[in-house]
Length: 65
Image 1 (cartoon, rainbow, N blue to C red):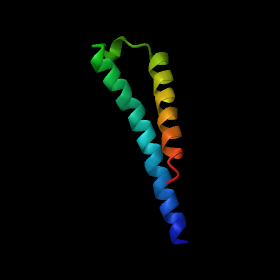
Image 2 (image 1 turned 90 degrees about the horizontal axis):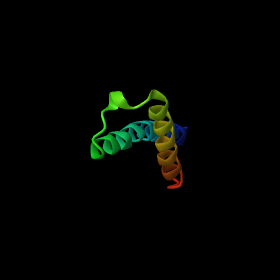
Image 3 (image 1 turned 90 degrees about the vertical axis):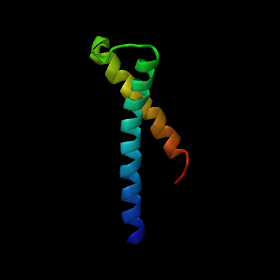
């Protein structure tokens, strides 16, 4: 029973990490290339966010924590 509680916490942390890291990677890219966020089309913003989040999720899941 105790182990299941920690599994839920680890799952929640990995989801939050992937979501926020996807946004953070975009922030870094926009800062490096001096792009204003309001000039980025919403579809490109969403596609990059989903893509970067998927990459981080794959990395975290491959750590076998």
